[in-house]
Length: 162
Image (cartoon, rainbow, N blue to C red; front, side):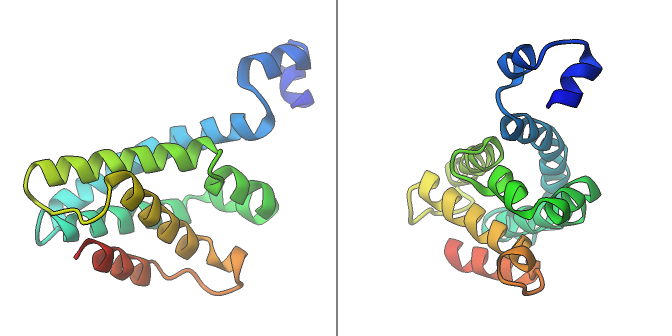
């Protein structure tokens, strides 16, 4: 943060006032990348889903997970600072996590309102669980040492929606 403040020609106090702490700034940066990935995932699901309900949501989520897992700036961040990165990406208090849940909740409500899917859980709770499943399968190499398995995550999501 000190180097960034110096590059901008401002004091550290001003930088912190503008953006909050380092994790908040990183969360905003990562969210700006996520928004593009969410748009790409939506287009992919529109083009490939066999039904506009559970399969659409599973394909949307799978594609977003794949985009996230393969995005080199995020991978480098997670590899270089796994604890901080996972906090920024997956913390209940983090920008990224909360906005992903909100976005997915909106999608679930949109799909349910259109009659494409019947939700058996509250949309906010279901969105939370789906995002947690996605996060655990994307980043499990850093959590448990196992390889990511996005297909298995998509299968779990389909089961949650069936």
